[in-house]
Amino acid sequence: MTAFEVAWGAASHQGAVRDHNEDAWLASPNLFLVADGMGGHARGAAAARAVVDAFRVAGDQPLTSQRLQEALQRASRTVSALQSAGKAPGSTVVGVGLTQQAGPPCWLVFNVGDSRAYLLRTGQLEQISVDHSRAQELLDAGQRSAAEVNRNIITRAVGAGTEEIVADQWLVPAAAGDRILLCSDGLTNEISDPLIAAGLLAFTDPKAAADQLLHSALMAGGRDNITVLVIDAVAVANAELSDYEDTIEDLGMLVEANDTCLRREVS
View (cartoon, rainbow, N blue to C red):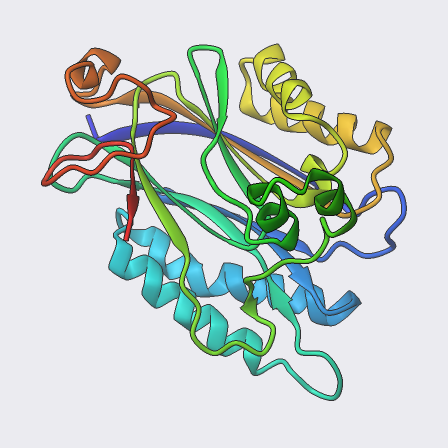
């Protein structure tokens, strides 16, 4: 068998308030991503589509950090070229690639901005990505009330007047039964992580789970565009959770390792 066998489902909606959907998403054999465009109507949508188009070719093969960075720079150049008069358009991006480097198969997770990646494993939900936002910076500084006020200010984006951009990256060992969630902030600004976990656990079919999460966000107000992409690891070759017991005790920890695929941040 191949290293990975996956199933996926997606749902996207303009929301209950916006009259235009500036989100875009990609599902390919080796790469999945969500992009949340900024810049107003057509320009925001064009920025998100440009990110998807720039990454599309990277999904032809198992993803590597180098291929990811090359795609990100293509996206940045294309989005920057969309600028006309006024504020430069931009986009977030969050994604996961299927990869097998020196060791067992892994998820290569990456993000720029405040679109998020989560891992559901053995019934437990963990946020993998870290928001590039003013709110996250304030939360890290212990200023929770100020973070709520500043939650829509992002500190890193593709385009938005920035030529060179770097994505945060994580390698996460993959196991059969893993469920990855990629989403724009139209989901996470409306429903809490416990409700997200409940939606993911309610359905075995990834499309049904994506639809349920979208519905929950709409019922909670739907004040922004909402995009949900759910990816399931149906089978993972030569990978069982027991393979990692001697090296990882807590999947919530970032650990360094040489020549093996452990739960670690890629520098």
